[in-house]
Length: 161
Image (cartoon, rainbow, N blue to C red; front, top):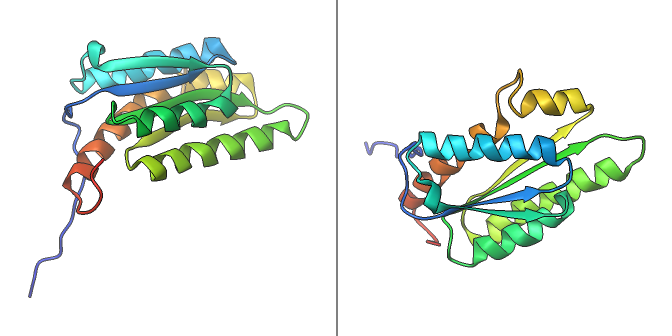
């Protein structure tokens, strides 16, 4: 009987550059996510000189820039950072769904990890907590997941980016 194959990404620093694509909207929250992502990459051995930051106006602009960077061949992963806080209109739902879909599409199209660290919260307080106050820092968490995904994809058969 043949053994079942099992793959899993590791938290060892991969060769290559990482891009952080950050929304300027709700910038005081997003700056915390940037710090968290940089800290997460650094904690796992990624040097600062291997991290680029690109700022876009808002969450709806994240997918276009993420796709451009991911398809450029210059990065092993792209991490999208933003904060969408629910207001009184349906605009929240549109922005949440379209930004998430575009980020996922960029990953599929490029074949590299394009990570979604866009906070979607009902209140400013929830966003503050998820950006480092009480609930950890989602930027830090997604940075670790990006490293794991780069390492996992390097092991799997199929398309190499």
